[in-house]
Length: 106
Image (cartoon, rainbow, N blue to C red; front, side):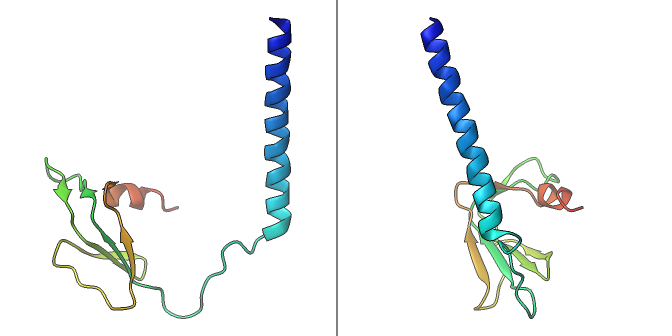
């Protein structure tokens, strides 16, 4: 039993050390350049598919479109239109809630 416990502790220690080493390597490799903002206007983002839980109705809304322009939700619904250069996200199989996304802002 002691042998098994010792083996488990050594394995756990090796995993922790590997995670720490990996984090340090990632930090020095990428530094603060992991995200570089682009110049110019913000992209338009369209989220299609999935289920919307809006918090105002008793039923979820299946497959609505959500368009985000300039960092703010500008349209919710099937009839939302976006520009040809919009970034499109397929949320099929996921649930979405604008209130939850809004609550993460600081």
